[in-house]
Length: 201
View 1 (spheres, helix red, strand yellow):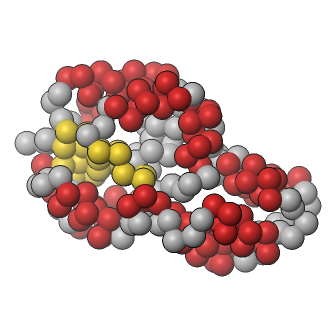
View 2 (tube, helix red, strand yellow; view 1 turned 120 degrees about the horizontal axis):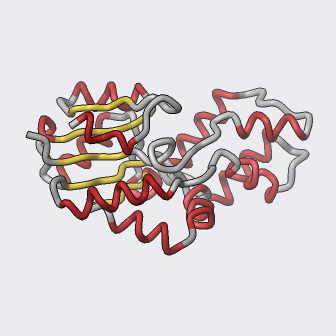
């Protein structure tokens, strides 16, 4: 019997434009020349291994023609809107008390302030209140799809994997969770919506 639900954040609740950085760089006649190096840098940032200042400074070595403020703006361009119907759905689910709800998001210390700006502090606090625990990768120093990240959530909250569902749009993340015995929903962005969850339970 399902008792716990762990949600991802990006493209589950808040909409993302995953090509935004590429498109924004093109406006400056720039392109990502070292994607693997930037991915490594992002991974370090997402586990809080470097500060926002250090991250932007290192990004500046890839794009020396850009001011730090512009790099930050481009980095945040991925973040779009948070539809109210998803927040209302989540609040209804939380109010039902049928399940223990958790958030587990790969994110960073630049994106979260922008998320709060987009949502507004009141809506952001409404969102956070729906969860028993609100796990952000840069705060817990762990990121998906590493198995230890999921094990941390399970152990910290004494969750049985087989009684837990994990919802994420990124297949490597749901694949790892599934190997640990967690029920998964690899949500297909643009084809499915988290508000359809009841049909999956």
